[in-house]
Image 1 (cartoon, rainbow, N blue to C red):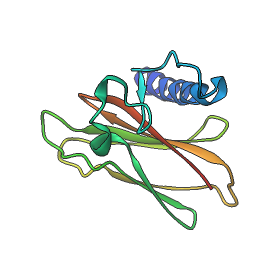
Image 2 (image 1 turned 90 degrees about the vertical axis):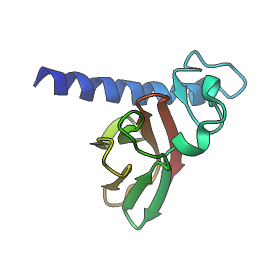
Image 3 (image 1 turned 30 degrees about the horizontal axis):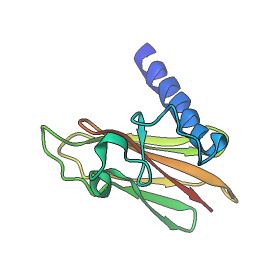
Length: 133
């Protein structure tokens, strides 16, 4: 039980940290460079963006997250998460190498604002994508 609490707390904290580069301003270099990766900031994983940045599809209040990453026992997507503006964890899905890295979440009724989606690779770290509805 303590392990679940640790991971839940760590994920929520990390999602909050993901928002810091936006707060600091685009012209400043973030202390999170080479810690959190995105399409615009791939850091030392430049060239790996296409397979690691989580893709977001929205239909009504439903969010589908897909990471276009091949899955093998040695190299796979470990998890997806969705964190709403303000730090609320909407959900998290973990994967084994045998799973397709696709997950679905329901937005709260009437939600308007930004949310952050994460995708974690067992070899290429933690990737984010943001979207506003």
